[in-house]
Image (cartoon, rainbow, N blue to C red):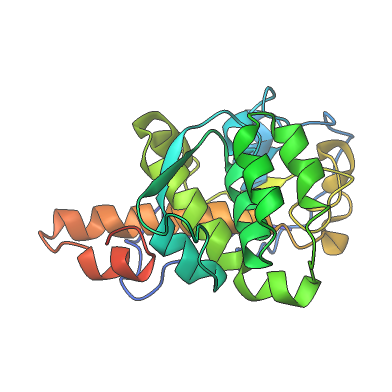
Length: 243
């Protein structure tokens, strides 16, 4: 598998926020690799970046990584198709990590106010992950209708509100970002770094990686427009980042 670098030589298209199909033509071969990530030379060679645990290499891309960011309640309500806070529908919520944000939105999607409150009451991403598997009324189809937008907007907020994290994301260039977890073929690729290079045709959905690449493309487009003295107010409104 080889990766086509869409950003290193050309500016991002102003009509396209996310490129979900960074496809490679170079077959991946070679010896076994570290279970967690790839070396820098391997990342360069294959155009890939593997991440998994929040305290590991490239841990900033993990949903569990500590990162405070603020979201508008009206915007979240619009995304999930339900008022997230009937008692106080306006204002904002500050989350301590992306996992807390996603669990809160997931519970709000299905009207599980108990799980919403529990998500906000805890700062433990492992608990948020556990809670997300116990949402009352949850259906796969119902969550799939909003999941991509929730994850992309959350990634833009997480990385956009922290200059250091934003630069970390942009520094990945055109690499394909992959959650390299053998136990997660939905948000990740279903393989660790050690085996992933040999089974790329059987990779999972990698939805977290795709959301991160969508955020990266958004920032690249934002920078391009800024350099052209053309503000992205309309685009930001579409992504529900401004009132």
